[in-house]
Image (cartoon, rainbow, N blue to C red; front, side):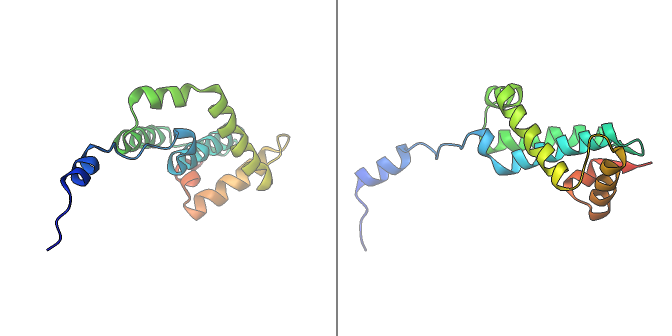
Length: 132
């Protein structure tokens, strides 16, 4: 039987947990925030699609719990959500997605088509929307 030196055990136990990546780089959280922004743009632009506001609120609470469970502090989460730079980045990614899907600011129906497609595909975006 091979013995493990006590110093190695002590060093392993004393080592801090792996550092968390910055929230701006956490893929799951950012993907969900981008999806929420896309859904919000669709519901605000398309007259025949509404947002599932209560469902979205519940999803936002789940996302915050997810971040807390990963080890992010409430202070870190709030700072990320309040960051103008991160908000601008998320909005830009959402706008790029909408443009690539054919959305045009002067054509509300283009947003409706995207929204109906997201709802039909049961995507994260679509789950936040409901057609009237």
